[in-house]
Image 1 (tube, rainbow, N blue to C red):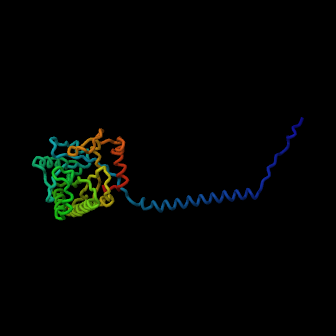
Image 2: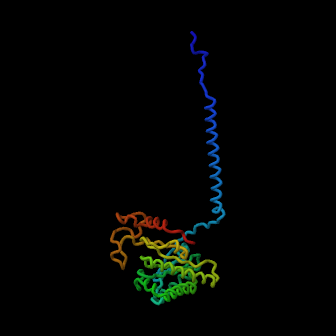
Image 3: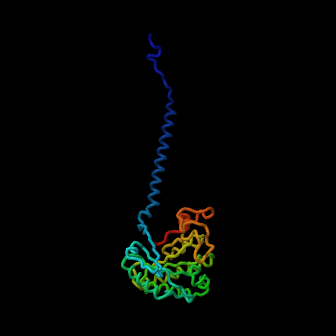
Length: 290
């Protein structure tokens, strides 16, 4: 018995105009995508050309160590050689604008450690505390602001100390500026220091600029960082003693915890850690010259 469908053919009716229309649409979309890709390629080349032609210096890691010249133990050559910067802490700032050592013993320790540091590639800086951080002069920034002559003496003293002892720069530990007036003053003083250190660079035939660095506290400080970083090479973010009290501030923070937590925190202080402070300041600042 023959299958009634054998030899039969199922036909499909096609519309040549419809096929042509679909083909035209496909071609149109293809040409459009090719055009977009070409335009994107050209724009990318034009935009990135300045970046490709600009030479970027690789990031220079910083390992900063602070040596207390009042310490009874000297740092070793091996310890110092692992650093990129060593800061000698600290010299005494006097009300007339000059700076000096606390005593002869600290002066000799400084000279000895500075001489040892010169045998390595480490950058040498001295630390100067001004304001509420200083236990011998309380909140003296307002006094500096009132006397331009003292400001000039201070800047001159800093430059002279750096050049006299063949140092690479200064690390300024300031009382946190809480008002716009103080913030502007601090920025102006940094500018004065940079101007004088630039002159000293030329006078001493130094190959590299002198270094200025400063402390930034973890609190919200509305400093104009873009302006400050025109004169300051890099910032030191202070994250120590987040928990527990400081010797001269019994009510600083009575919460129990590590002095410098990386991620941890407690309730309202949940962001009081290194991660929170670094994240906050990385959004506010632009990396400096070094």
